[in-house]
Length: 216
Image (tube, rainbow, N blue to C red; front, top):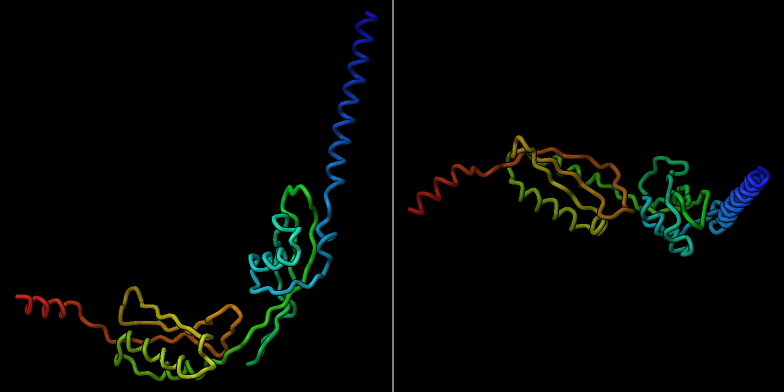
């Protein structure tokens, strides 16, 4: 009986030692983790951000702080004091929350950073007006395209800054919408408007009859 009690006591002590050892080991691993803010200080200004998207912001941070590459992610992005601007070159300021990725082996925590992007605002009112003034049912879609190309290429203020998209109505091929678009992410169009027009559509049925006539 004494031997059994001695064995149980020894087993209990050994188990306690194992539990304490494992606990200390886990604590040691946690202590090795560094706060993201120890490398990336709070409110650091990040340079060369191309666009206010998580992908572009993350790329800029990792370029400025290579040690954080593959250890962090962007939790959110907010524009600071957003307001409507008039035609001008505009600097928009943003804040973003940067956090360690889940279960990262080196870093924990999160931090707020700042960045800004320079936008150029382009007033396209003088482009939209002639599009609106074009009469319906007098031009084909291709003629509309040529007309828009001439407008955008005739003045330097629009070259490489403004592009466009023409979309056909799925139920009515004679109906199109014309939308002017910024040619790059740092361009903002002012006084823009989607223009809807009806165009001349070549009859496929008539074309088929003519083709059959001359093929015989």
